[in-house]
Amino acid sequence: MKKTAFITGATSGIGRATAILLSQKGYQIIACGRRDERLKQLEEELKTPVFPLLFDVRNREAVTDAVASIPKAFRNIEVLVNNAGNAHGLDPIQSGNPDDWDAMIDINVKGLLYVTRAILPIFIENKKGHIINIGSTAGKEVYPKGNVYCASKHAVDAINQGLRIDLNEHGIRVGAINPGLVETEFSDVRFKGDRDKAVKVYQGYQPLKPEDIAEIIYFAISRPPHVNIADLVVMPTAQASSTIVRKEL
Ligand code: NDP
Ligand code: 8X3
Image 1 (cartoon, protein in one colour):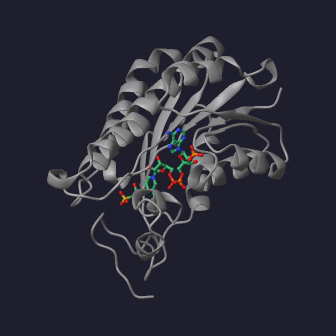
Image 2: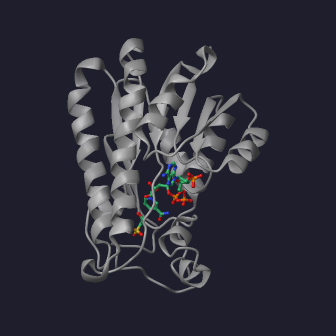
């Protein structure tokens, strides 16, 4: 039976690039997201079997139902990539929008937990599995106006460590990949479709590409079974921290 990877946020950016690469490497893909058209497009593009799962990670019941609906041929899940997430807004706390805070906590933190909780019985029964949590440099430091997004990614950092501890007895690998600036739809979402603002985030230097992160994810999951990449930070060469980016292009 082919190995299966369950990827959240496969409709765009890092998740989509990971689905494409893992399919090229022979994995069947369970591709998750809320945009049906994008999932259909991905299914047509991939060479290996794809099972599209349309759900919002915020909806606990929808997550449970989605995982329960996975057919037998796809239940041999070996890899879970917890990637779905976004920043919503970039404001000081004193003028921040609580709806944005809810979105970030509900998607980046609670959504990741719901999905993980739903998949874990499969990993525990199979006595194997590998969870890759997509954190961020925002989970390692806090930058101006990053407040709640940074809090959500610090939570991912803590959950990554907690999962590794709790799952140790089951032999399940758990690791986080924490990227700096990657050019995706991330800033379009953060700035609510303001294209001019989004484009500027990646101007004047060479940002990471989603494919760079996909390659690191593949590197992590293709290590021998005794090797677990527990926590990895990756930034563009031009970036030294969340606020120091050398612009020369
Ligand atoms: P994109 O905006 O390109 O992709 C985000 C993905 O998350 C989409 O596929 C989207 O799918 C999915 N998603 C968002 N909200 C939900 C939801 N409520 N339910 C289900 N799926 C959802 O951004 P990236 O590829 O950059 O982001 C992927 C991850 O990488 C995120 O966790 C982000 O925080 C992290 N990251 C990004 C960095 C960057 O600079 N780009 C740097 C560090 C970390 P859909 O809309 O179809 O539901
Ligand atoms: C995304 C990178 O710097 O916008 O996590 O927080 S940043």
